[in-house]
Amino acid sequence: MGRKSTVDKLPPDIRRQLEALLADPRMTQLQVTEEINQALERHDIEWRLSKSAVNRYAQRMRAVLQKMHERNQVAEMWLAKFGRIPQGRLGQLIINMIHGLAFEAGLKLHDGEIDPDELPELVQMLRGLSVTIEKLEKAASLNAEREAEIREAERRRAAEELAALENKPGLDAETIKKVREALYGA
View (cartoon, one colour):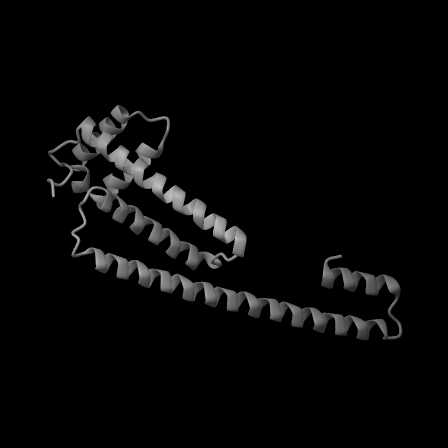
């Protein structure tokens, strides 16, 4: 393996800034390099990024992002076919975390930085995360079903109460209409 890239030595917050700047189409790599070097200076870090290091990292990012885009297209095709998507914010958060991990792993794999002995551990970790997502999806589906059942039970109860009101003497049609609108929104 080659020596560690200066980008890989960046503190996490500056590295996130680098990635955000590289993703901004208005920024040139020269501007990105200057911004990051200013951030390094503000953090009292003595070394600086070279334009070529930023360029190499941008190329790595593009290659990995292209692979992720292709995988997302395949996943979207399957989702369209089967209509199965994770529900809820927690599921989405975990998916975003896995995307981040996959991005980092993809960069390291692309650059040959992952030791072949570590690959089974990485695969096992991603498999565990996939199982977690599957369980979260199942729990979210059960919750959605339960909520639908509760709404249906409430709708039936309201319909029964409305029917009982309709049979009460002394209520005019206009009052019943207002109650119906309040219950059904129509």
